Length: 428
Image 1 (tube, rainbow, N blue to C red):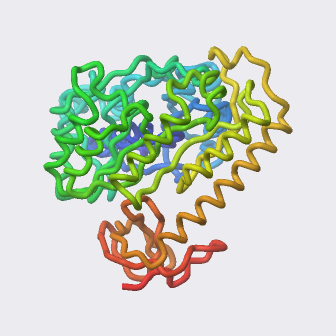
Image 2 (image 1 turned 180 degrees about the vertical axis):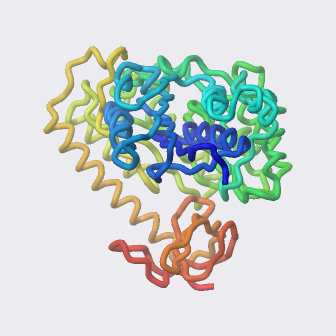
């Protein structure tokens, strides 16, 4: 039995944060710690925080109190966007050290070395294990989960008027394709699917004389499924889609960021496209992948959004026919351009959120209805009470009484999952 403390990482926010968590957990595991995630009992906790909305930052703060309910004697460390934005909100209770968004693996190394001893730790986990230096030298960071997240880009140069992320994550920077390939080579034969992520994935390669299209071409050598994180309209072109077609098991799920379906609101948000350009991108994607899932984010209640502009957004969402929408009420972030604008009445924002959420439900049901009776290749991941759960390539969740962890199985969905009860929803 190890004398080292048990370590848990509590992760909030995006897939990029999840990748950072996986990398930090790998450091602790390699050094001999028992590791877990979330609110399971542990001796040491790391909060990997988020600040994309005021609510996300609030949840990051509250996570410390939630941890102390599980273990009042817990030693807590905080990193991420919320602590980068305002470290003082975490400087209390059992929080021993606070870091920001950069060098999270280095942060994990320092914590681990504190308990192992610096000299012993350096022998167990050499510097080459550290991927925090400009994304290079990634040898050793291996995630043994079914789905492997790989961060290929960080930061953002867009400065959308509502967004705090460029201020806390910094300017856009990309890994080299060679570094990405080195990491993916290390999970061959282990992960059945990889998720390529970034804070602004579409900006990949712009700072290194490369491109996301070039990365897609490089991924054509692998047999595992390839899934992409959120994309911007400007990256969608024939060259890019041709490259995705070369990938043996490309997952046709495109999360294409929208934010508003009204041109005037898009301009106020400092989004650099029109609804017409967005719709053309959607049509091009469907030319290549007719049955694909196209999901998006929509912010309702932006300070300049009129009722007419909101209705334009509703009508545009129906025109596109999204398979799902992440609906967010506008969140004022201090330090952004939009943060200086007078917000709309909370009642107006709540009303618009409810109305857009009703459209979301309508569109989700329409898309799920189209999946019934269609053969699907499902990657099964978890099981509960004898029911296996997994996802199709277009990221539809499927339940079956037949399955196995990390197994890809062909099924035909026959019923929708309703009312929280898993029916015999598939047949072989």
